[in-house]
Picture 1 (tube, helix red, strand yellow):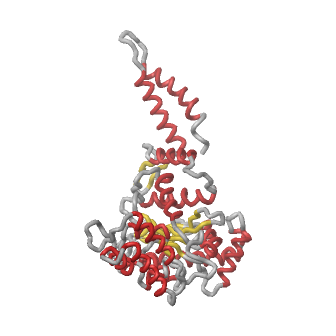
Picture 2 (cartoon, helix red, strand yellow):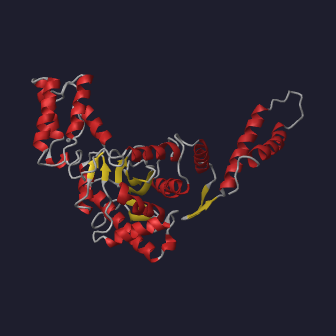
Picture 3 (tube, helix red, strand yellow):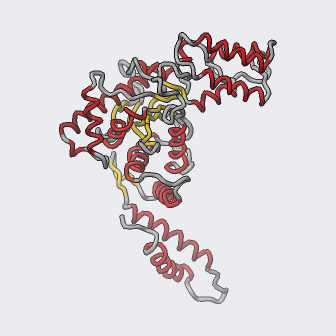
Length: 413
């Protein structure tokens, strides 16, 4: 286990006293510098994903930010058995500790810095150390998730937290509730609005989001409800909409997380960095499409390796500029997946020892066998032929393979 890249590693052991749950967090020096450099001005977002990441459906939680060009940059990743408040709080607290520890290290030895702007990293690190509270991101952007809110507040009691605007609107249009799930057709609590009425309702809701204080809340909600009454009338439709908002959005706990309450006067929650966390969801899609090649990954250890050795370096070495997935990268990743499943790549030699073949040797052998098989299959000697088609095909395949595969396709390792 590489302590410069991996932390919070713990095996699942229900018989331990106390029982332990599986967990592992990943962040190397460059990612820590990313958090130091950008989180103080551009904030953080946090989200979790379950689908296709591993056969145990262990959630992958990611903390990330954006650089000054508003491009996604990862900060840390966390695989765990659940995403309960205590689990997320432990991840955030240990990440905070590592950021502050790294700040002390780079201030002591600036040659450790890996970013191409060491002066900016050094200045940001010193600023964190000068703050009695240590590392405090400017704000957090999350989905409407109670465990995430509680975990953030456990580590940063005065944190500014906002729910992604896209997910707020999406939840309202689906009539999503705090108890989980959506109000379905046939539920007498589900408001029944036309498309035009929903659009008018969202315009009124956007105006309500501009409320800046608890003192102004009552007046703002009365104006919102008056607008709703003109949209939906004064009957059962209006009462259903009113009850939905009062139960799921107007509580003191949630209303601060989707309005402008608590923000500086010069800022609204529609600010470029404070509006959505869709860029972290795009990153999950990049993992699925590019680094997993749209395959359902099975092994947990493989996912850790992909994150530490492929996904994070991708943002360190390359700055993505393509509007869509890079075709060359897709080709390389598919080649890597083929290597992973090539017979003979990894063989057990004796107890606890494994022999790993050279990538070049393994793929050359596999591709040569494929070329040879195709040529033998294509050979159709007549009934009177005395030729040995397999031997001839072998010689031809060797020459074709050398010219077309070894000389062109296999890069030096």
